Image (cartoon, rainbow, N blue to C red; front, side, top):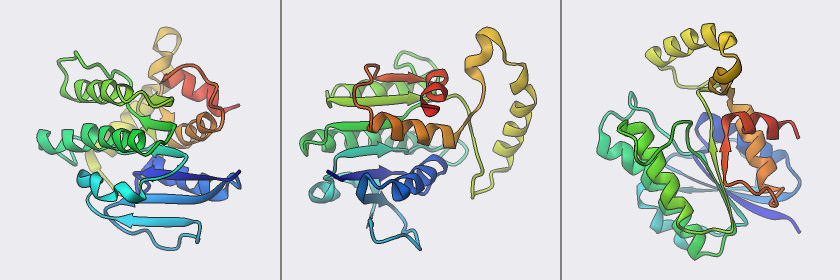
Length: 220
């Protein structure tokens, strides 16, 4: 039986790659995108719902699928206001999980980050940790939280400081060996492939997927 998938964050780097994979995958007959802006040139199997994702409740009646892929995320450079940042990085995934639970969706996948820790003194890590905690509290049967290291890929939007940071990190990336290997950059393509794998191999027992494990699963 063919499936329906929901993607949040399809206009982003990893979400865009995932979208193309789902379009090409014959196991999926419908893909629902929830976003603030419309994407052009998509096939008929893709349905777009345009609106404010901070008010996700407005989509309740349409938020019905077999799986939810949550690829939402912002940066402190793009969203310096901490209140708004938390509404995006915490609020959208948690509200999506609540809607998924209410609507009987049994598979929920979300991208978090390495270092996520609800008890951290670092705002970014704490926000991700609190998001993970409250997503897991929904007790959706098949919940997978991916914790990638720094994500590598070709972004459409150019962020000067971020580009410099990525360039510097790429210089030291080959030196991250042994215990430091887990900090190696990970391609957005790899993350998207693992999300697709997990959605279609529901017997995977671990809810938290480390960056190292993301790389391993992407090759299966």
